[in-house]
Image (tube, rainbow, N blue to C red; front, side):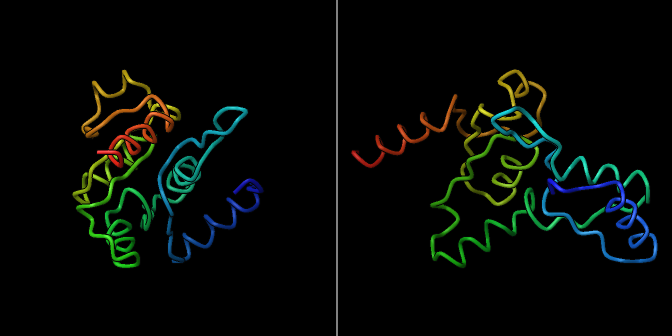
Length: 142
């Protein structure tokens, strides 16, 4: 929400304290932009969690249900899918939990050195999406 204000956060906390559901799309802390990182949903979740003591129900990544829904909608079996993303704790975690191949792209939040301490291990690591496209083109030619 690029229009987030203190008033919106205050109202969200008030509603949640009164029993409203606290639902989040994903817990990514930062969102890469051309100008650099900006706060993402995870930062907003942290604010609301700290103020209310309420944990959100996350309905998007890293929940594996997203992969199952994509498989059902497209008719492509999960075994034929790959999760490509720039975050270990959401993108790779979701792919692993759903049982699909995972490709970490090092163009966003995650740096190569983060792999050493992460419990989430991608199947492949790419320097860029261009590298992933190259792999796909090679597979198509084979």
